[in-house]
Image (tube, rainbow, N blue to C red; front, side):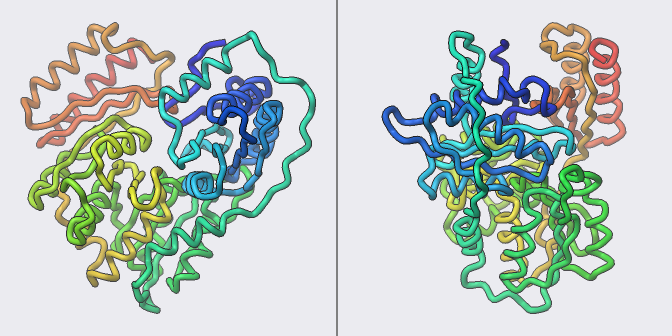
Length: 446
């Protein structure tokens, strides 16, 4: 069995097929306990899931491996990734597991591992787990495990998250719209936001096991944009399937991405003396316009690779309080070590209330450079260095931009895609550069 098991954000695949087949899942459950547990201790494992119909089946297979190691499983049922992270950290659990494929289609699923301190497992820990799964010298007994009873454990997370609006008087007419992606936030987000006094318009909160992310959520905000304008909302928020990221819409229906949210949040934290080092962390995908806008306020941007795990690792290394991704993962270090779409929504709502300004105004200073992103589906992941013509075209694009833009070419960690991102002053020129590279990739790998 290959030790290549984890991608950018956990294990992903089709339920019933490797790596989400019965045998691998049971071995993964056991490997998680062996790797994350404390020797001689009674290990407690919290498992939460999104709304996919395969979720409970996957939990059952994981539980067989977990309990073969004499560990105890608590099935928290429908929980977002940040909820599992918080509840694992503050609920006395040794490890948390999220069964979700995030923004992927409903037929996919996945497994994410949260350590006892509420952080996503890092590369080293995942490598150790993968090596154990691949080790053929041991086996999980075939003894069936009775389904773990679902226990409601979400209340402490709700209380913790509500505190982000402590001291703020919510206007009775503050109307916002949310798109729950028919996912993990479908119950908790409407209840929490209404409980805070917000006038709420709710979309896509009726999961049926198959409709998660289906033409909705953070990757498909079209209906949210329409609803915000038609219902007279101040803003809209679209979560992804597992609730760890969010994309916004302003009152005019325009999209407001993670770069603008980082700008707004960084300014708020800096004004309150809560931005140590006067710096934030962003990934290589964030637009150069973010650097320009924050530089004017004396705030630096440190870059890292894609994924909120990478963002947190860089934040932790530098002692930085705020980081995020253009795609909507935002990490507030004093809240959680993972992205949290609901918490980010409260931070933006607070900014709108306290400033009395519209989201569009708060984001206006972000003037992004033109950016082109082309995704090419590939049949295999060949190192770019082994594709001489592709490498030559990338180098040519970098010379053409001559320091006035950026070229980033990388494989997706969750899908069979090569992503080609180019920024520059001339949109037509960078579109041509990106498509030239994409055509060569299609010829070599398509």
